[in-house]
Structures are given as structure tokens and as C-alpha cells.
Length: 400
Image (tube, rainbow, N blue to C red; front, side):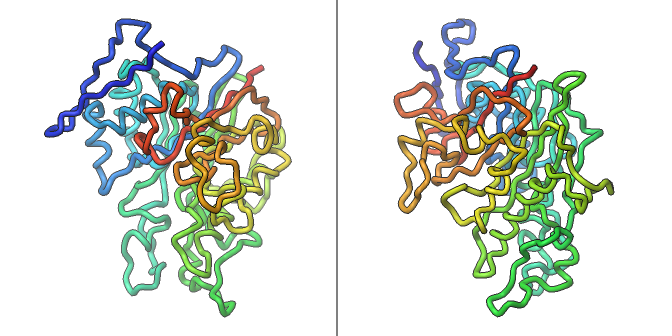
């Protein structure tokens, strides 16, 4: 079956014209097969769907077919066909307009040789990015974006997260830790100056939120008697700082929050005032661009090992033979100085940082990173960062 993915780009108007024959079933190519009825496919994808200013992404999605990278994002999703999909770096709007436009104008249409996929349940996640704090965090004498926001952002809602699902999202029982203060985490690795003094002043640390975006638990109602907790976050990258390693340390403790949440630590207090975390019997999946590679990169104190080696995380997926991998990473992505196997990379910059980590009481059957090798169908979708600088990571869970 030949791979069909044709675009005609008119340089003046940048309009992409669809030449695929969607009336012909043989024109539809989905190299990743649909899951069996007793499995559900979960995925995480950093889609880099943010703008230079508020409103830009919504405006583009009004005519989404005209934008090549948006069509490629949709094609990747329609190729892998996850049942539950978490998106990173998608602008936040409280009315769900961005998700609705993305679903209606790109995902739920037969385009470019790929069969439509529809997500009836959608949830955009409020974020600290671009929310201006009340103090001068960066100490430059003024309170202004982006560096004095609770999470780095040039406008409110930039770099947010969202979820698309074929199953109901129980938003009434969601638990958010958006406002949780870093100083309230026991043994927090707060940054220090080289002389041993605290990097942040008391005034700053009294309002400094741990989550650079949000940490949210959204139960997905798979069946009447089965809910899977979607634990979603996007910790700050452990770079763009100095000797104090403020971002590396924050990244470490953002990851620690989930390790403590699944361990039901009683210090945790969500935004509604409820304490503690999950029960041992609860089923969960940790999603997100966690900005922490288990081998390479600039993580503080091997931050991701807090989850990968946690007794309540499925070790077959975190470290074993179902760890997501791709042929494309193995072919293209060995970076100078890296020691990790590039087959596990989830980004074009040579790191494995995107995760779909199930609890140990969930059984996984298959997984992958959507990065076809150059001789495999679908390679054109992601070639040269055509869709995003990250790859979609997916995991199949057996439902009993």
C-alpha cells in the first residue's frame, strides 16, 4: 500500500490543498493498527501548539487545513489513534475552543489519506505559565512577564496542557496542585547561591509555586467499575539557569510531587484543600513531557528515577522490554556525548523525556514512539520537526 501524504502549498496564501482520495478506502494508510477491543491506547504528545501571543493558535485553528504543521500533527494522531491523548504545550482557553477547533477542523476529518478520529471528551488544564506573580522573582526591579510569572510564559496560558478522550473525564473529582508552594514540600531541594545562602528571598519563596504549569489528577472513567487516574504535568526544563541550578532543582521536585502523590504522602494539599494522594489500589498513568532523561541531559540528581524505579510504577514499561522505542530514533538521533540508546529518544534534540507510565496494577501489552525510520511509512510526517520537536509516545493497556 503506497503512503499518501500530499500537500500543495501556495506560497502567497500558504494554503495546503488535500489531494487524497478519501472516498477510496485503499488510500487510507494507518501503519499503527487499531487496538483490539480489550485494550486501550494511551498517549502523550508535546505538540508545540503555542503562539507568540495570546489568540494566535485559536486563529490558526479556525482555518487549520491551511497550516502544514497542524495537518501533520493531526496526521500523526490519526495514524497512532490513541483512545486517550494528553497534549503538552497547547495554549489554554477556559472555553475549550482550541481543543474543539483542533478536533472539528483537523482530527475529525478524513485528510491526507488518514481516517478521521473523534474525541467527544476534552479538558484544558489551567496553568501557572504567564500568570504574573505578586513579587519580583528574577530580582530585576520590576514585576513583569515572562520571568516573574509563577511559570515561565510570555502570556497567560502559554505552554499549557490538555487531554482528549473517547472515555468520560471525571472533572468533578479532579485534583489540582497548581497553587502548591515549593517550600511546603518536605526536604525540598531549594536552590542556593555558591556561598550557601538561599537563592530566593523569603518574599519570593513565600509565594513560589512548585508546579511550573500544573500537576493535575483527572480520573478517566473506562467502565462503571474502573477509573484510571491520569496524572498530568510538564515540569520546567532543567536548563536556562546558573550555578544555583534553580530549574534543575525545580524539575526534580516537580517529579517528586508525583512520586509522593502515588505514595499517598499526607503533606500534599491540593487546591481544594484535600490532603494526601492516591490509595495503593488505585490505577494510574503518569503522562507528560517531564523534561528528564534517565541517562543524558542536565537533570538534578537523576530526577526521573524517582518515578522509573518507584515500586508502584510498572517496571516493564519504565525500564523493561515494553519501554517505548522507535526505529527512527535509532537511525537518526545519536548525539555527541550521549550515552543512552537513541532508540528510546522522544525528542529531536536527543533525549528521552516524554512518558506514559502506568501503575504496577495495570497490564501493558505494547508501546512505542511514533518515529518511523526513513524507509518506513509515515516518516514524512515527522521529518525535520515537521509536526513538533517531540514525538508521540503511546502505550496499550489491557482492560479486564
